[in-house]
Image 1 (cartoon, rainbow over the protein chains, first blue to last red):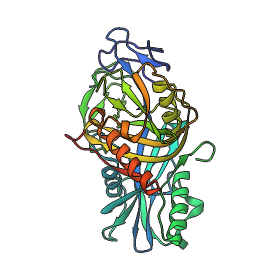
Image 2: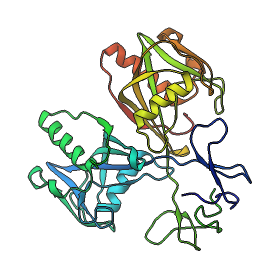
Image 3: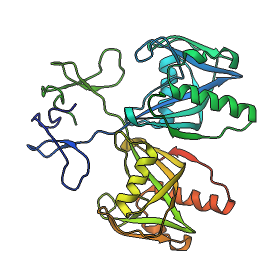
Image 4: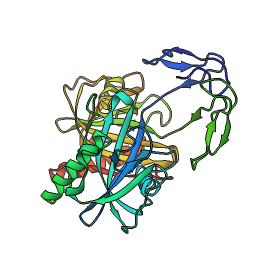
Length: 180
Length: 180
């Protein structure tokens, strides 16, 4: 919740600015309008042969559950650069990013996930600070009942289906409560 | 530039928080870290028969040049909902959003564009407040030398190529200066 102007420090009012249609935190002292927009989460489904890189979360939410490496995209990076950075941060994994694969909007938490297909350049992976454990899982080793997020389950399901079919088809969609 | 904490109004310091790797605006009074992340721009390439909806910009940047309807995604909406909203705001256009078509990262301005294919539900379009003029252009009528943004040109080029080939293939990539 924005209470003070980040430019001048005055208290803001929450109202619809002229010419706008949504309520914003507006500074009546200096005129700054504080827009708040969805955040992008970028990550990858990285494979080494028939194995998929999974990370066990060391942080909330969903501490102790398994995820694909992903995190908030930073300013001044591209989505694919962010996806590769997250693989390095969470699993010390060197990856080569290929195509954009799944894109999910999650409106109730104002996030958009963009997951890329990627190749692990070598199988030497290890937990980063946000992971308790990492593994290269075969299809049979995926912990379906211990996945952290709906986007992880859907991305894995699509990937396994597409791998069987021999063609990878990008998917996009929305994830609504209570399915997350 | 963030100078004051939006939670408590104290002056912030710009430093790398413990456990982080990038400089953030940190409030030493209340502990708030002000993350800044890329913004998503959502829009659509909307067609009616063989015609494409274009909008002439009434606002900076690129006032007077032609664009596809697009704008900043808002909190609590999905990407496709945002794309439909922008078509309505900029061209009073009622659209049915189909597949995600082009995704471009523009790292130097920390934006990500997501453009959808869409069908205009009727040809009754007119300028919204951010447009000087709107039109339903055939391929021959596209003003190639008066397009506002690289993402518009690329999206139109891909669309026309894919339409000739009879199959629409999603594209993603990065746009770097000075090409924007």
